[in-house]
Image (cartoon, rainbow, N blue to C red; front, side):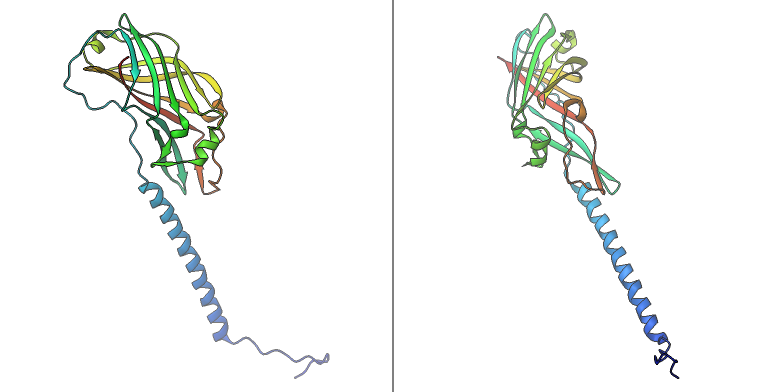
Length: 241
């Protein structure tokens, strides 16, 4: 029957058609949810399966006894490594991003059983992550302007007779770390050993990015984040200069 306006009354919706539309919406929602779950799992597996080098520590103890006097100048040689370690988190899953380079130079001086001076230089342009250069790292530390990080010992460190005889020691040293064009005092946790004709030293320095005006990398988005601090690590193999 027609209304007075001349329009016809529309027939009620067919129950089967409405039901099919609801089913399609459910299937679409389920498909989107499934894709999100797969994305989360894929990102989590990617982060967890990324190879993460262990922290730099002293090599396994050798069998060589001390050779020659301890006092003198010792230079950084082949086998030395340095780099950084920063935690990244994505979708609640965390792992460490680790950079490494063997482009390490420098020297230390031992006198009277004490480490009296030390200067270590790291070529930041040679740092790689999983063997590949990282443009974000270079940008954050502005390695084009400041290609080198330098640590200078501030106070002498007593090594002791145990170190001279080949025992592993742990000491705390103070100095200054120059990074990204900025220099600040730092405290370094160091382990050391004399192995034959070589001195072996490993340690780490905590680095808060804002202290050295380091800008965190962009592109992490709301699903991921990078810690605002990290650790500078090093392993030095030194021979008499």
